[in-house]
Amino acid sequence: MADKTRYSDEELLEFKEIINGKLEKAKKDYDLLRNTITHGDGNDIQDTSPTFKVLEEGASVLSKEEAGKLAQRQLKFIQHLQAALIRIENKTYGVCRETGRLISKERLRAVPHATLSIDAKRNQK
Image (tube, rainbow, N blue to C red; front, side, top):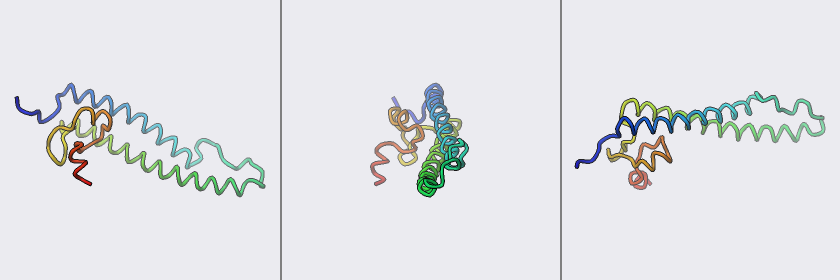
């Protein structure tokens, strides 16, 4: 029996459901981080006494920087998941971009936006 060159439509549907679930959660997390940066949650130092304001402003700036970095990472993750959905529509999802072989289902379930098989990823280092 010849090796499969792509996943079946049923298998692609399974992966699409996994990705959509992760995408929904990732977007919620991104919105939460963005609200932290823009004070969309209304939790700020505006109503505290001036004595603690200087200390809290420093912590607030640091917290905003960290939230900004996390938001950037989350946005990148969302973009990778969206690209994976496009690959599903093109029926190229799950094909290693280095070897051209199928990436294992176990890897795709754990890292649904993966474009490299485990072997290709190890050889990359």
